Structure formats: structure tokens, C-alpha cells
Length: 138
Length: 342
Image 1 (cartoon, rainbow over the protein chains, first blue to last red):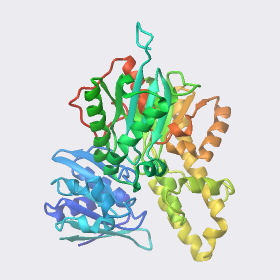
Image 2 (image 1 turned 180 degrees about the horizontal axis):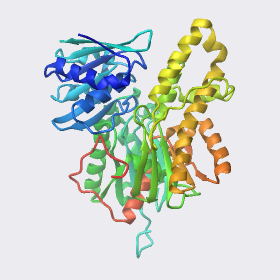
Image 3 (image 1 turned 90 degrees about the vertical axis):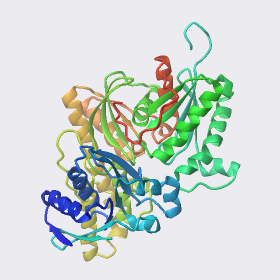
Image 4 (image 1 turned 30 degrees about the vertical axis):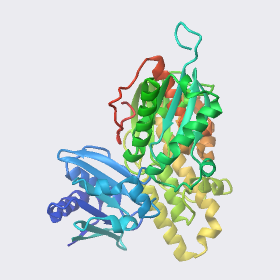
């Protein structure tokens, strides 16, 4: 599935469609270069899930936790991780297999640890600075 | 000193919320040791420290406590209470400090004291003179946090504003990445900025309501700016690195201080404190000093070792909680999320 969005105002609708396309999958992998808008889209998805918590970048903390009416949302940023061993040391598999929502930025860093059932979301920036979202369920 | 005795109050502080494992001894409100696991300490005990790894806290915790006690020349039997970071932070990392504090205190039959890491950063202002008087405003800026807090009393704090996306320290680090500088790039940007012209390039200030911050848009702005410039001049980065760093640093600093100014105007509070690792940034320090003269602020900045994540700030917080006899029970568990107010 491909979606397009020319301003932040369109993100709630994108978030809604991504959650619908996920059909119950709870692991979301966000691909895109720095500044593509991964954290901003995750903010919208958390709001769609009914979370009232302030979503901020977990680059330093690696994993942020938010509450939503049905449970927890784990927001990962693997940017700072050097390899999968570091991710294992943090206990990422305990989060990934917890049955809770996991929204993962820079998933390439932990490719070998990710569950097979997931949703890949690729964000690309077009010439006119609008964003294109490619969504693929696995 | 303990009431009615001449015996000093000895607090062991433990910090393990993110990357650093740290231990500190505080006696009657004075920090006698503040030890953070470093490559050097670890060499003494063998092995190397990966940069990030919660389980590594487990390898570090005994050596840092041992060295903290030795440096302070106290024995474990002198300790009156163990203060530890309960949160916020990475759960696996917090668990190590919390479990250590609980078992150590249980074995010594002494109380434990839970400390909120964000309150700890602010309480670092009560380690050395001059100490701010209440109420004061504290801007806490680090790799993971950006907050303005109104501090009414030691444990009466009010969050006035915080970042809605990236932290200020992250803005420095990610800019460094865009500019091709190694991680963590904050200190490198500071070094280049000293040689550059802060007015060379202009970046717009995000319009964020109230006292909240946003740094994500600035990061994107810098990225497109660099891309555009590189199209015209492939040597743009190497030729203008000092000017770019100076301009970016100036923008980050004014974003921070404009909100501090707004908070000061709104509350009428002129005692301004800064805390967190980014308070080492020389641009922030210098601009703050200039503004303090213009706006008649009293400015407070802790020594650098108490600005980055450290156990000294946890031990001093523990000391003030000990005076209130504010102890935690042994069934306490760490919290990944914790508001500065709680």
C-alpha cells in the first residue's frame, strides 16, 4: 500500500490507515532517513491508539514507554546501537515479544532480532518535500 | 548530623538510568566521592565497557561502589541509607541499581531512598555553593531531556515546559551527524562554533506554544540547508564548518533561552539554574551570562561532573530525603516513566 501526505495535518489519517492495514499486527518498523518524519508519524499513531502521553524521541533513552487504553506502547530508536549484541543486553527481545505495540525506528540495526510478523513502513521525502509512505505487511 | 547526636549522616547514592553506572558518598550534605564507570576503572577489574548495554551495569556496579566508598574513606557499616535512581530511564538499566540498592541495604539493615533522576539533576544545585534560593527556574538540558521546571522547594517542583520531540542534546548530536562529525557530536560542534561566526547562516526558530520546545524541525531544516549548499559547492562543509556550527549552536541556545526568558517573565522568577550535560556547552554558558546581565538574573550552573548523569546528584537528593525521613519500602520497583513532579 502506498500513501502520500503533503503536510503534518494529514498524518492522523495516515496513522489510521496504517493501523487498519496492520490488521492486528503490533510490530511496526519505520524506515527512512534522518528528518523523514519517523518520530512525527509515531506521535500520530500513538494518538490514534488513544495514548495521551507526550511522545518524544528515544534516541538517548533507546526505548520510551507510553500507556494507551489497551496496554503499553514501546517506542524504540536503534540509532545509537552499534550491533545486535547491545540490543540483546538492553533486553529488546523482552519488549518485542511482550505482545504490546512496538514502534521501531532504525530497525536495520536489529534486523536479526525482529519478529517475522510485522509491518514495514518506508518514508521517503519527495522533491516538493511531501512524504510518501510504503506500507508492507509480513 | 543526626538529630541529638554528633554522628554524621552518610548516604550512598547509586545511578544507573541509562549509559552510566555511578556511585557516590555524601556525608552531611557534602559529596566525598562521585565515581562513574569508565574504561580506566574497568581496566583495573579487567574487561572493556561497550558504550550502551544495560547488563554491563551489572559488571560495573560493585567496582564503582567499592571505589566510591574507598575514595570517601568510609566503610559500608558507616552508611545510614542507600539512595538509588528509580526512574525515568531504561528499565533493564534501572533494575540493576534498584536491585543492588535493595539488597545492599537489606544486608546492612538500613533504609533505602528512591530518587527521581530528573529531580536529581535539579538537586545537583545543592551540592556546592552558591546554592539557589526558592523559588527558582531550572532548565534541564541533556541528550535525553529538555525541561523547564519551577522549583518551589526541595521536593516541590512544577513542570512548566518540555520538548515535544527531540532533546536539545540530540539536536546537537544529530546536527553533528548531518555535518559528518562523529557521535556524540555536541562537544565537537561547540569546538568548531568557537571559531565561527554565529550570524553567518540563519535558521528559523520553531513557533511552539507555551514553554514547550521542539528541535525536530530544526534538524530537518539544517539537513535541507546542507543538501542545497552542497549542490552549489561540494566543499561547503569543509570550508564553512566553523560558521555552520556557530550558527546552529546560536540557534539552539536562543531557542532554549527565549523560553527561559518567557518563563522568567511569566513567573517573575529571576533565579535561573541550568542542569544536565548540555550545560557544559560554552555557547549556552556565555549567552546565559550575557542575558543574565541584561535581564538581572542570578545564574546557577553546577560543576560539570554533577551536570552529566552521575550519582553525586542522587546522593545529595538522598541526603535531603533522609532529613525528611522519606524512605522507600523494600517492595519498590523501578519506573521507566516518571514525571519530574513525582
